[in-house]
Amino acid sequence: MTIPAPICPPKRILMGPGPSDIDPRVLAAMAAPTVGHLDPYFLQTMDEIRSMLREVFQTSNDLTLSVSGTGSSGMETCVVNLVEPGDKVVICKNGVFGMRMADVAERAGAEVTTIEKGFSEIFSADEVAEVVDRIKPKLVGIVHAETSTGAWQPLEEISKVVHDGGALLLADCVTSLGGVLVKVDEWGLDAVYSGTQKCLSCPPCLAPVTFSPRAVEVINARQTKVASWYLDMTMVRNYWGEDRAYHHTAPINSNYGLHEALRLILEEGLENRFARHMRNHKALKAGLAALGIQYSVPEGQQLPMLNSVLIPDGVDDAATRKQLLTEFGIEIGAGLGPVKGKTWRIGLMGAASCEQNVVYFLAALERCLSGQGIAVDAGAGVAAANGVYSAS
Ligand SMILES: *Cc1c(COP(=O)(O)O)cnc(C)c1O
Image (cartoon, rainbow, N blue to C red):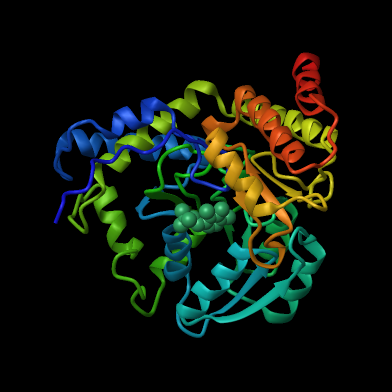
């Protein structure tokens, strides 16, 4: 065979639903020499990752670590460790990731009840209380930031009704962690997973997870073995804990990357980081409104890092995304599931949430739209965004 050319990816601005742009410091950390998975240097790195993850999750949970795998492996880890065959589980489904969680729970042998909402809607605490009362589940699963719809689900009230019903609350914080407030302890979340490739701005590789003491009790009281050998926290925690017992070889360099990504977050400060995400979201929203583009999610429930907007009438979805990518190097996301072809998902996650990206994207989008003969007020998008920046 002819040997393919070496990897040399095109320059992109990742403004889709993930992965997001990566800070060069994270990539540099990942290129550092690999050491052994039991090397004292790596053991120290693991301890530091755990401490930094506790800060970012705002928790004192002992069982906090990064699972070897993408965000979905975090989902699977939480489910398979808490669920035994026949357990009753309630999953809140209002998008693709709630659907995935229900599938994972079924595969783990749970008796799954779902409550469903339209794409772009969120659940009220009363709706969750009703089903918890009726089903009396062991676990309730919900998505904090539904990346498929751009809807922002409040968790505090729901956590109360779930606990009043004697159940544990499992929260998907893959897209929310590092972009908006996630308070694991204060909100009483029992099992939380995230992923490195969204607002943590690290390549897709690891899934930070954290389990409350109540969740750990449930794991310790299991009657059956965890259905997944690889994701079994009763073994994995011995490698991340005092014993340092070999389980599987941790992805060393991926953990270097996460270590640097977490350092970047703590350097910036959580509050500053959330404010940055909100400011860029507001500027983007003002710019899009000036171009005649509306959000698919009601005001007050819109995620700052995942802007799901309705594609205006007469605009060619695929052609616009293609032009953004090939002419401007900008990736945005298409709609998923029932909103395929109807929405765009514009990510402003982690390092990608910056003024340069907002202003450049609005200018590029205007070019795409006017090229298709859509009437837009020249320069209005950028001007509206600049207005938000100069006012704040
Ligand atoms: C991206 C995402 C996942 C899955 O993460 P992968 O890294 O793609 O495995 C799960 N839940 C939500 C809300 C996500 O946005």
